[in-house]
Length: 275
Image (cartoon, rainbow, N blue to C red):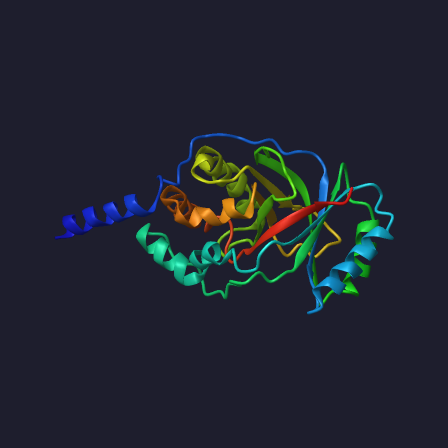
């Protein structure tokens, strides 16, 4: 009887998971120089007025020459199928199938919490004007969270961003059983090769990791970093929910992510390059 249950368990694993996720092939990615400051924005109900006020603050600021990108939600409900398996019940179910302990209790945001994000990309260190901008944007926000990153990794090079492109944007939180440094090492050393080697099972056309600094910083740094997964169109992202291999790979990622993040903030953004 025990042998029969073991066989059934393996069949379920084969049906629900794409590959043996703990041991992806060895592959390394070089960090790109520069510093990125992220401002996460949550506004008031008058969304149009909120964004006009935010953009007005950006335009009247001398930011010291960084590349400025603004991210706004492409859809608030489209990420629900992606988020639900990453709630604690979802993680507990998939973890049990793979004999991985469930994380401690947490309350996930199924609907995206933030309305958007500003990304300031500097070639070297961040200019003090970034702090000034954060302080002034804070006056028009219901909520603002900031974090500073000093390592950027291109895992899947973008095949060309257009106005129709969307970015599945995952704001990563350090899990209960890792330090930030340990989680980031796993993220780039183990998780990134897993995504790279299986990218053809998804509709993604680009993937970047940006890691929060481990040193001193003037920003809040509530997150361990951000992952940008790019799709050519909103439909390309949404259609993945009906692709068997994509669903199996997503299950594999969910279990693997417990080594580096729990209760991430997940959004689907459109990106606007301002400079």
